[in-house]
Image (spheres, rainbow, N blue to C red):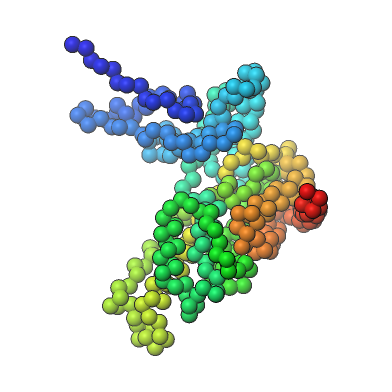
Length: 357
C-alpha cells in the first residue's frame, strides 16, 4: 500500500523568500495528536513595490505578528552587483530603524535582519495608514451647505458609513466641498493629527535621519492601548432627556451626533513612521540641532515632499497642513528655524519649475 505524499503548495508570485518557506516547528508541537496545531497562518503579501515586497507573517511565536520586507533578486542586474546593492540597502534601513528607536522616534521595532538573503523583520503596526484615515474623515466631514441644523443629514451619514466598510479611501470630493481651515470646532481631530505628524517628523530630523519619502501612506495610526470604553448609544425610548426635549433635539440629531463621535475616532492613534528604504542618516550624535543627515536643505526637501504629497492626496486640508506644520515641527526640532527658511526657498524653486514645465 502506497501513501500519497501531500501536494506541494502552489508557487507564489513573486517567489517567497527562503525564510518563509521553512516548515514551522509549531505545526507539530500540539500535545493532542488527534488535533495537531495548524501552526501560524501562512505569510500574506501586503504590498509589492518596484524594489521590495512586504509580507505579514509571525516572528518566533505564532502570536507575534511581524512585517517582513524582502528585496528579491533582480534578474536584469548583474548578480554580483545585485547582491551588493541589496546588502547595502537592507543594512542601511536596519541601521536607520535601530537609530530611530534609540532616539525615541516612533518607528517599528527591528526584530531581525539577514542582509545576505535580502530581508528584515520588524514590528507589525496595527491600525490604518494615515492616508486612509484622513480621507475617510474628509468624506464624513460634510460641507456646511449640505448640513441641516448643524448636523449631517441621516441619509448622508449612512452612505458614508457604507463607504467606510470598503477599501476605497480615495473618494471623489463633493462639488461644494469647502477647504478645511481649522476654524470650525469639528476640525479639531484633524488639527491634532497634523500636529502629531509634524511632531514625529521633527523628532525624526532631530535624531539625524531624513526619511526621503514622507507621505501619509508611510505613516500608520497605531491604536492607543488605554482607551475608555465607549458609552453605548441610548435606545430611542430613553434617549430624550428633559433637557434634550427642551432644546428640541430629536432622534435624528441624536443619531447624527453619535455618527460625529464615530468620525472623530477615525483620526485617533499614535503616528508611527514606516518604510525607510530611501532614508539617510548623518554621522552626528543625533541629540542636537546641528546633528543629522546631510544639511538643512535635505530636511527642507523632506518637508516639501510631505507637503506636496499631502496637497495632492488631501487637497481640502492643504492650507491647514501648511499652517500646522511649522508650529508643531518647530516645537519638536530645535533647528527648525533654519530648516523652515530653507523650506521657503525650496517652495520657490518648486513654483518656478511648475511654471516653466
